[in-house]
Amino acid sequence: MTEPLFETDVVIIGAGPVGLFAVFELGLLDLKCHLVDILDRPGGQCAELYPEKPIYDIPGWPEISAQGLVDKLMEQIAPFNPEFHFGEMVTELERLGEEGFRVRTDAGTTFKCKVLVIAAGGGSFQPKRPPIPGIEEYEGTSVFYSVRRMEDFRDHELLVVGGGDSALDWTLNLQPLAKSMTLVHRRPEFRAAPDSVNKMFALQEKNELVFQQGQVTGLKGSNGQLEAATLKTPEGEIEIPCTRMLPFFGLTMKLGPVAEWGLNLDENLIPVDTAKFQSSEPGIFAIGDINTYPGKLKLILSGFHEAALMAQAAKHHVAPNERIVFQYTTSSSKLQKKLGVI
Image (cartoon, rainbow, N blue to C red; front, top):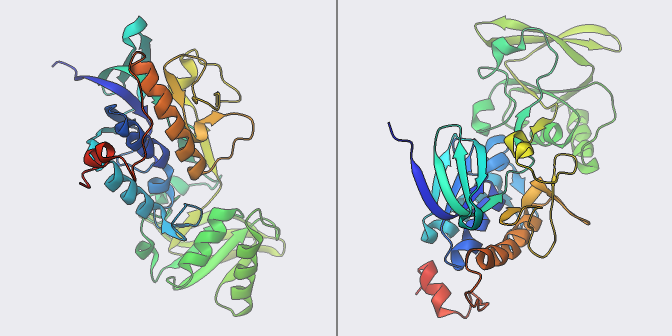
């Protein structure tokens, strides 16, 4: 069987919000994009870890869910017909001189492209598994490391474990749905936003949730279904009934094969300039959380800005002899035709 080969202007590694917006900016400049993502759908961490969680710092949207943002970005880039390759990881990169690059995935898909854009967040990521004996038996049935649908937790005895923003946010968001809510953290101090911590303690005072200092040391149940958790607390060992558990112990980031491509790296991040967001290798750009530069802020809106400047540089790289006239979507009939609005 012949492995698929695609020729395109740009291959984007990562289909999170920044990678998706890069399609828009590149599309305005007539650059065709293919996107590769190890996940099974667009959205990156937004779709995988907190699709229903509200985001408050996207310009023009006082509040929008992570999945809502992804949906809007997909709608925005639809006129450019990007091609997606989900469930694949880019494993090989070969420079073809002036012809660009040959890129290959672990599924055997091969691309020939002029430009490679790395928009892979912090790399591939996986939740850290807490050191609880036998937890694997419950994973995916009654122990979950992310919330895909809040409704899945309605009317359950819910146990949230952790002291960061994710733990506090989901404690507050799921408390109205749960039959009971218990938050467990090993100490009374939290790493989360103070406002979230105050709201949690206010609910505790009204007996609408329980905060318990301690650590989960064991799970009780059968056939993957939780019944209770054993906690080691300052007062001794106790047992808490629970039918669903959400442990938030952070993420393990792995840069993966990118680390072997000869790029200059800085603590597993890719240093770039702030004019082109190009890496140490001409034609390879890095945008979003994967890159680093003086003053870097790991915000989605910063990644959008990086995508816009990267696209201009990518166009020059693909067509060095073509005169590029900067245009505004509000006034350019040419761009509006590309977007299908006229």
